[in-house]
Image (cartoon, rainbow, N blue to C red; front, side, top):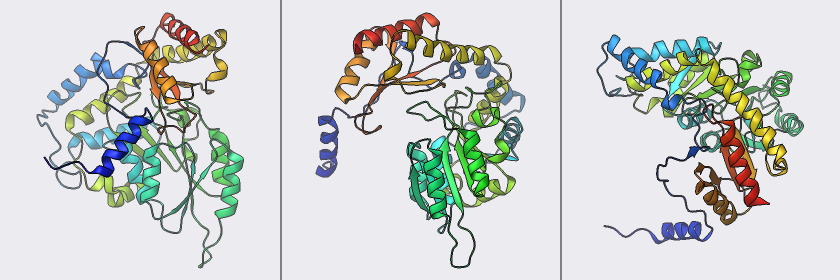
Length: 386
């Protein structure tokens, strides 16, 4: 075998020295405070069986899409599922991508043009930042959830071009941030985008299945869907399956079909994958109990961290993501290991995934976590950090 390049070996060694080397974890049977399966859909047997039955009813006995959607891969379930998703989210259209990463790099690399400006929250997900990096537009970050800082940037960069046309500004943010679990003030952001005629784009990956009466996400639960240019919904979290969709106008869908390279140049999802997405959406309408239990667990978790004096180390959050800041890769890994030894699956988030000094324990809450489990894991945390 050809020798591994020395420069790459040095990078791996540097990660090891920083106690930050990533490795694939071994599956475990610990109490789940780590997965994004917020309402248990990944293990939902009803979805599993109804997906299989749907394929039988439609006599679909194909394992793969066979090609890109623009060639042979646009099987009949795609149109049905996209129509259902669009209706569910009160959107003109929905376009399914193979993953949330594909949706974000497809959108941000294709939609903003060379003379446009992208203003993005400094804590936006790597997939958004990668898509922006692939774009020809200029981009600038604004302070996390800081509407005033964003407005300063808009007024600074929304100048006229040589042909006297206003500069197009895109604002990129998330409704729930994956590493903090907090949310922006969506009402203020929509007002700001309207004031300056900017195009607001919201990644709802960690809001779908969590916010709203039917788990429809934060934007829609606030009735702001018509004020947002595009929403990106991801199915690998609350829906427990795989894939993502960009919600927006019919014109946006047509544009992405023509210019989003992560859509155009990839094999489509299999019929089974798309059927699972459709059945998961249909199940959302039946899962009132799971949605309410998740909301109840989020409230209880916040009450317990106050009772135990843990509130100062946690990032403010009313979502299913709760993060305790414990600076230092070695320290946060040690505490995570001690909690795992007590049968709770809580994962450390290390630098460089988060900035140095912002290392943390990330608790993901679920509808299937009991109040007893929440109390116990937070009690363990308090004994290890105090």
